[in-house]
Length: 256
Image (tube, rainbow, N blue to C red; front, side, top):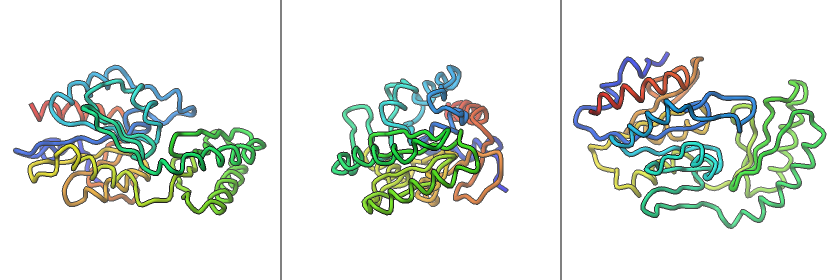
């Protein structure tokens, strides 16, 4: 059972350390909703993020497209990483894209998977720049195996892609040695935040965030957002996006 991050804010902030805060979007800054386009950032949380960037570097790493998550948060001083860290942009020309050579292949696979999902009621395909997601949140439980089979068959035909399981979604993305953990480590280096006095804090709720928790196990702090206990590499937990906002506000106060 993880301790609540709310009970250890001062300890997480560190004494004399300089935090760098990394956040997931869906399920962390917003609740998980049945339709992804409805996941809107509350104004109060946007205000908290604006206050936080005055105290520490902030990056948001999302499975969403880069432009999508950037428009939803709309704070210029934040670094954004879309497509699970495959597409990164930030202030002062910061930019990194991974596996761009596979974009034409993803265009082709998008059409192929779309045809296979057409007959499954409730299934929704979402093309992102660097991945293809098959959402099954609104699919009848008995039909979920059909969605997984369709995605698995495509993944088996195209070895340059890998299948990833998320919250009510199967996703195909380039099968290269890159994930949110690698993206966080790259950002720490690119932003000049690798010193001993820098304390990376990563807050996320999904399986993809576990890569970041593991990457920061020795040098930083992982905080899992989940109402239910589960195996994790994170050190602390928060229950939901409401607790995330409260934690960020208390962190800001501690840093001041």
